Length: 263
Image (cartoon, rainbow, N blue to C red; front, side, top):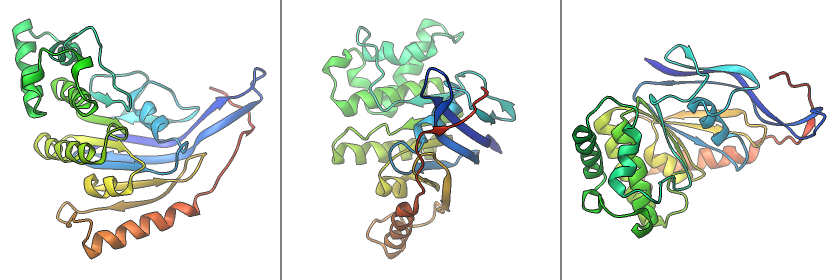
């Protein structure tokens, strides 16, 4: 089943008050994401990966083209499409449990049911013992676990993850990568995961999409069978990593240019 269709999407931002110049961030991107895929978007900084995630989430609208979710055009955010941001997005005046429950504020569940859902989500990310702590007492890795727990409580069909572990140390990042991978296998959701780290993408993804430099265009895609060994020292992984990294310098680059944008 196709969850997301991205059809000829261009995204540009005006750079002058007269609106006669703009920076094109994404240029005529077309993709589709299927049910239970784990897609990693890779490419250089500024190539529009986060912008594409924001378009799928409904936080922004394309300048041209359309984005569809289950066949319906995306025009606004929806609880069916959950997001884990790069920056910690916890409410500091709430404890961990209440931060997770906040994702359920619009549901019809009773308070006790919300507590139970939130506690089960925290258990899945090994944070049930910290349920009543404030975010300022948590490490960076623990804060991002809370963000993942919030998505688990929401139970969206689509997870959008914007470099969620990039600010963490290597050991913590790898542990959280493994946790997300295990949750994906259990929950069978679709995950779109932005990363600069090719090793991380190779460890997680069933499909890797490589973007050019700005304005972002899709250069190439790689499908990775779930049965393929993810051992980074294996010959298949070494060869695939080389193929992806060798493709990156071939990116085309563009700068701010005159453009007529009709939103």
